[in-house]
Length: 132
Ligand SMILES: [Zn+2]
Image 1 (cartoon, rainbow, N blue to C red):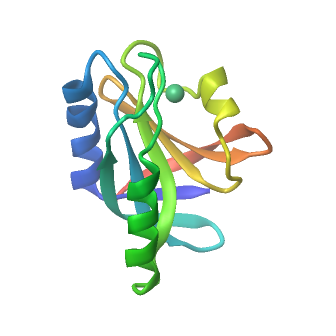
Image 2: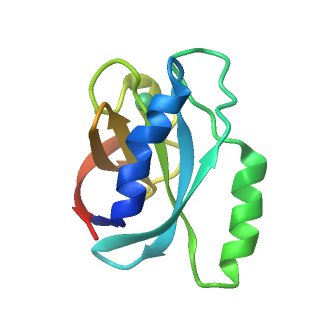
């Protein structure tokens, strides 16, 4: 799976991660999916509703509002983004436990690095991240 990410979104993610420190930052990725790629067209930052400092929880109301607005444009929420303030840009056990929807793209930012994954079967498969 190839994930195409606009340069301005790619540049914004580490900045948003910094702003959220020491907590995790999170948001929803908007775009279009075809058989072998996902093209990200937008990004919506979310409040992090998780109580634990090393976790994230997307605001469900943001998700619902976005879905409603996007349907008319042929776009959808295609993925989720969050940051790892300490540690690597790799999915954690907690992330795997929270991977609720197969096929959803997960972007993880740690420091300056962002990686892409596809949720599958309660785990993650690496995806190739391409800057547009
Ligand atoms: Zn995580």
